Length: 97
Image 1: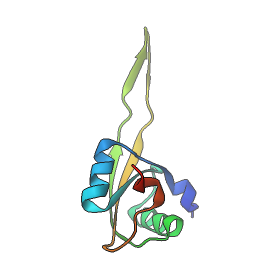
Image 2 (image 1 turned 60 degrees about the vertical axis):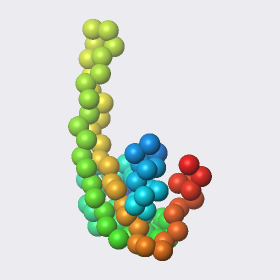
Image 3 (image 1 turned 30 degrees about the vertical axis):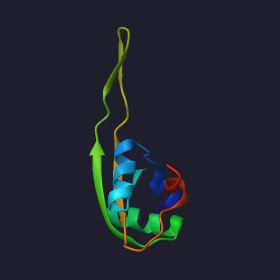
Image 4 (image 1 turned 120 degrees about the horizontal axis):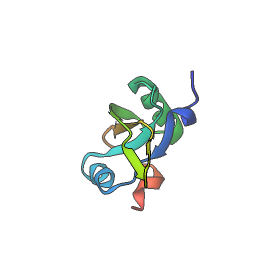
């Protein structure tokens, strides 16, 4: 089994992510591509010491990028929406945004 820090790559701090945090109590993370919902749930609970209600995931295909005549692709990645149980305190990284 992977460690929690290999599953959770980084928080996704965007306008949409912050809006979801404020209205629904949901955190948004970039996670490992092969991580399951159960692994994401356990990783968030162990890292942030909170209780997770639900996890939703979405896979994103990398876009084609060009530099002049040369083309390449951005990597594919996976996003997880982690909803905390009611009454749980938000982790510190997302409070000051």
